[in-house]
Amino acid sequence: MNETDLRRGLDDAVAAGSPPLALDSAGMLAHARRARRVRIAGVSAGSSVLAAAVALGVVLALPGGASSGGVGAAGQPGCQSAAPSPEGTATATKLGKDGKPVPGQPTDAPANAPSGAPACPDPSETEWPDGQTDRTARSGPHFQKGVELQQAATSLLPAGFEAVLPYTQSQFDHYVGEVQVWDTETILGARKAGHTGTVQVENFSADPTSARTPLCKIAANQFGGKPADCKTLSSGGKTVVYFAYPADNDSTQLEQWAAYRAPNGAITFVGQARTFTYQAQRNGRPLTALPFTKSQLLALATNSRLGPG
Amino acid sequence: MSDKDAAFAEYYATRAENMRGTAYLLCGDWHRAEDLVQGAFTKLYLAWERVSRHEVLDAYLRRIIIHSYLDQRRRGWWFRERVSDSLPERAGRTDHTDDRVVLLRALEKVPRRQRAVLVLRYWADLPVEEVARLLDCSPGTVKSQAARGLQTLRELVPDYLPAASTSEGQS
Image (tube, rainbow over all chains, first blue to last red; front, side, top):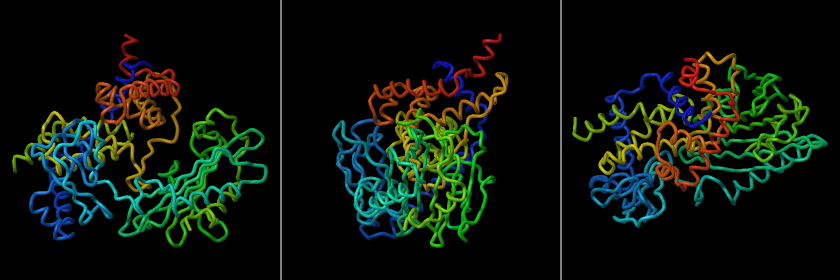
């Protein structure tokens, strides 16, 4: 395959399967107008200062990048926007929980940001919790939960296995009202006698918006597999969903996974594979058998040490 | 309809298909592509007064689409799309529909930023410098990511030839 082949292939892929647009111009316009009304209503519900700003014609700042000379975004004086502002002045509105503007956050940006300034943040970007500068917790209680999850997963490996090249991350996902939804994961290389497989544990704090979504659908969408092939089983009196690829599957993804939704809505997921799909060891020797039996995997999903707590 | 709304509607009618094509090749799913494009156009509408210089509209939209794709975790994690679980078995070289599926599924396995570079360079046909601006990286990085992405595709589908190439070869 050369560059020309790829161009043709991509053209073909788009042209062949393209369904009609879901929205025509009128539909898109109506959709956009609704979004503007919602945004303005959100602003109006905020502080009177903010409402006054709307009345004066607040416009949203743009994401950064394409050209210099733009205006800055909220909290980011000196950043570049995608296009120059014809007016030279604008006010950005930072959105917070529930996608609503944060009262008091609009910030008058400098009219002429210096060339080479960093890109402005997307104005619809979620407000990071607890003073974080991005999604990942690098200290504090959520970071510590990641550390503990890695330790717990390591300690629960079957006898004879050691954990290698662990990858652990605790990251904020989104707000539901005032509630923070967090996603904490640890991926271990499970090594035994020079062969390495994968054990992945990931938990999600309770999210009321997904409480009625079938767990098989959630887990399959997140970790692969078909929801229709996901089975609902019992382990220690608790309901666990389970999925396994066929034995001859050569997918680079997890071969089996199990997921459990606790009564409080938190979800714990455990998956395993004979190969270690993490980049550094992709070409390593795979295990001859999965680290856990099916029943062990189901039990792990319900193990409170692997849950979000 | 105001002048603004008329201009916006006209621009959507002109460019929505193209932008959705970019989004589709990135995420591998028409529905998700539709969501990405609608979200991008909605943001464009909200910022129309300041971005309606038409020479930057495309860049503005692409930037939103690309960064929404690269940061899927901004959306609820249960909404992340998966095109497929594995590459399909290939029976032969005559089924062009299968060729397209093979390419899309291989593309899904290319790391996200490399995939974005491939789509922007070889489908949107953007110059290296513009891809670099969109991805906030250097032109050198774009070149190396494109080379790596192409190499990854070659490894995944070593005998791939698009329908047009096959036809030409047979004629």
